[in-house]
Length: 300
Image (cartoon, rainbow, N blue to C red; front, side):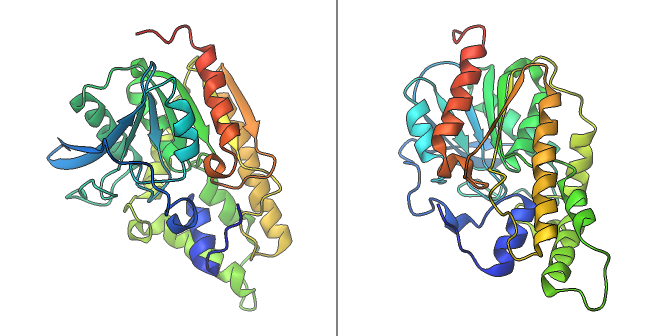
């Protein structure tokens, strides 16, 4: 799938950890016939379930992407719902879920929202958590607080708490005559870490990164890491050496996620970009099925 959004809206969106929402599947939303709302911590949150079978797969989308109306997961979930129950939801302030009264928020806040939502809906665990992009950090936050409710984790091109600092370090020293693309990248990355209002969920990314760094490992919880192709150019407007370094940083950070679990495995896409689930759904389906097969039992 070729994506051609505008220059900086695309560039910084990728650097934050999510592509522009209109680029992938926005005109083909997942069916919402079963979408429901329930009050969580004093505000309505929208969720949706489909399929049957245990364990339930809980989907965490990328930054700014509503879970219920997102089409990027359609092919994956249409396949997996034949054998497993799927739970999707809109995080606070997205889709049909009300915005929180207090901002900025952190990953810990979002993980607690997920916990309360699963409790309020009486969704039976333990769960297989599937997190894409920034959703991977939410999944890790939830697993740290409620490990007994986690049967396994699949990280799909997940964000990493060190990515922003690594990308800033990849930029050359600031000079008055530097290319506009370098100047823009530095400006937007700095703003991303400093200003929660620069992202659609008002997340304090610096504080959230610190929270994730402070977490322990997942122990023996089965983990699968799905990574976009190293052939994909994450930020094509930057000078090639800088773009290559940013991509190498991403690939290195993805590999480092394997150390989170003693039962981890990685799959790297042949050509798919950040939205692996939309561009190479078979790879994501295979990773989830591989994890499910490794679980002791799919029975309650």
